[in-house]
Structures are given as structure tokens and as C-alpha cells.
Image (cartoon, rainbow, N blue to C red; front, side, top):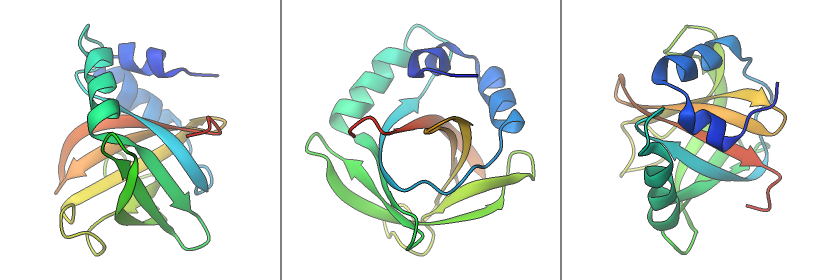
Length: 147
């Protein structure tokens, strides 16, 4: 099935979790991806918050699959910063395989953050953000959009 950012933003947290659980890890992605933060999923505010975050805070990620790292694109200028290690591992949500974006050894600012992503459609990943062991928000990554 194909998904859109608008569909994910309109889903409830339970629906997002169910989609993540039903999806496979897929391959570790390579190249730039447009990112969308999914905050207050399924509410009228979700798309407005996502637009605000995308414009002023976080725009996406740039993966280097061969090196097993990524950089986040942040600020209105798309500065590449905040590095993470990228590898396959066990999801904290359901103990099945996912792609882990691990900041614990690569970032002073985000060392307590761990992201997990799974492929939900070609070139489209759904992600979970953890602060320590606590779930924080969801996000999606679109590859091949000229991000």
C-alpha cells in the first residue's frame, strides 16, 4: 500500500504504532530524505505543527549507508548537523528488526535520543523517536523528493 504524509498526519497514535509494527525494516537508506515530524497525530493541529517544525527546526536527514551514519538537516537553512550511527537492531516498540538511528556516541546535544525507522512504502519510512527509553514523537522520511 502507498502512503502520503497527509495520511500519516491524520492517523491516530495507535494507527501509527500498528503500521510500524506491521512493517519490515527494509534496507538502510542512502541519500537525502525530506522529514516530517508527526506531533499530536490525528488532530487538527498535526499538520500545522509539522509545517512549523519543518520550516524552523528539522527538515530531514541525509544518510550515508556505506559509512553507517546520517546527518540531520536543521534550521531554516538546512544545515547538516547532529550525526547518528545507523544500523539494524531490535525495536524497543515490538522487539522486531528495525533500522536504529543512534545518537548516544555521536552527539553531545542529542546523546539521549534514539530513533527507529521502518519502510512503509517504496522510499518512505515511518519513525519513532525515543528520549532515553520514553517515546517522544513520530516522524516520516521521504526519499527521492529532491530533499
